[in-house]
Image (cartoon, rainbow, N blue to C red; front, side, top):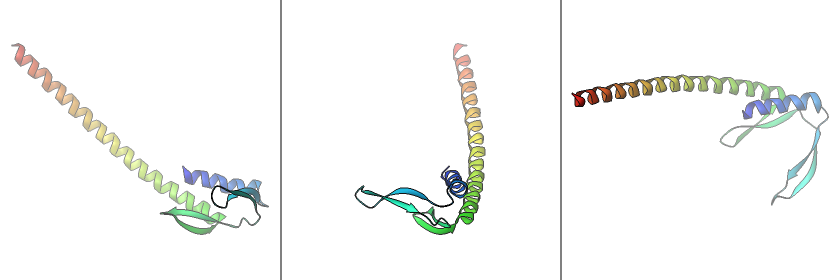
Length: 109
């Protein structure tokens, strides 16, 4: 989700804010000051474990696309495993139910 937000933000910067933008920057102790970003040819991207890499806008977009593909594949694998586990649980519950019915029938005889 964060990678999609980053990609959308990068595209917005590229199309709507080519000359930069104004923002507020935390300078410590929750004290903010106004700043102007003029040069938008590169950004810092968090690649994990609080490690940041300096990337150009196209590089950052490609990185986002790659991470989204990887995460999508991983979520698909987890989804398939989840479906298998649910089916196994359902079969176990059916078996327990059948066994309980058999025990109740034997007791009633």
